Image 1 (spheres, rainbow, N blue to C red):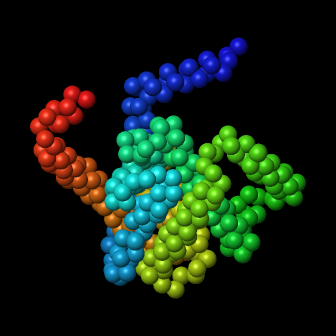
Image 2 (tube, one colour):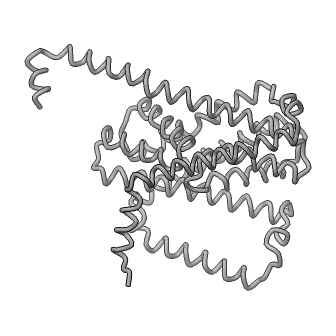
Image 3 (tube, rainbow, N blue to C red):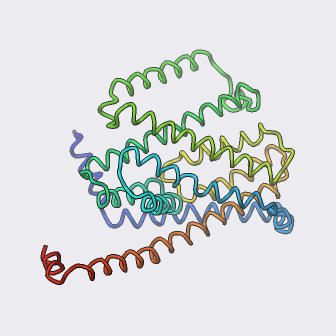
Length: 331
């Protein structure tokens, strides 16, 4: 009979095999290409000329994009300074790269980059750095999941989403079982918190508050951006779009989530009988702006700031007396 150690050994062998990385890369590219192909088909169906004529022209759209883009890296400076000591500017550059990795490679690749940076710049053991990043990821996930559940509940209770049409016949027994299971899960998480979570309760509460404030501000700005481009749209419609983007962002290891949202958003606009060309133009511009900004900042942070840092290190070494420099090199 296969035991747990054999399964673990098999998993490690498969996950560490070079062919696995190649297959994962091919799969990610295939997903992105498939989504791009569907979007192109949607745009042809809507009419390219109509979509191009509907591109956002209001300056506030692009101003809000800047605030939206930098909201997470700025928030993470305050969040991680609750547990680490680091210069804010260095942290800001690192959190920008973390954002680019997560958005353009795959989910949690940014956390790997943050760990590599943290073990060099944070005065803590590697295990502590890893636990801190893990705890922050858990709090961030809890925050977005709570908002997602609350928003979906608001849409259902407000009658904006017909629950019976989504899940068929609604049975009280199934609901009761689901509520009991959720309650049991919450109790288990609280009881085994010290095994799953390492941060003190007070620190975790402060970090949770930061994440919640950032999450609400970010999505409030997103609603404002959409409302500027297509004024007069009922707020319930934008809440539905917001629920969609939150759900898509919670799917782990999904590449190019913004492109997936473009595809899903166009489909949703047709279901809601909106001006689909305007929605397509708005979502496409936002996605392109994100990718161009990600590329530009990644190149800037990877090459320019690296060269500046190397020059500063060289200058500092040159200022050290010759004998001290030799001793430093020997060590």
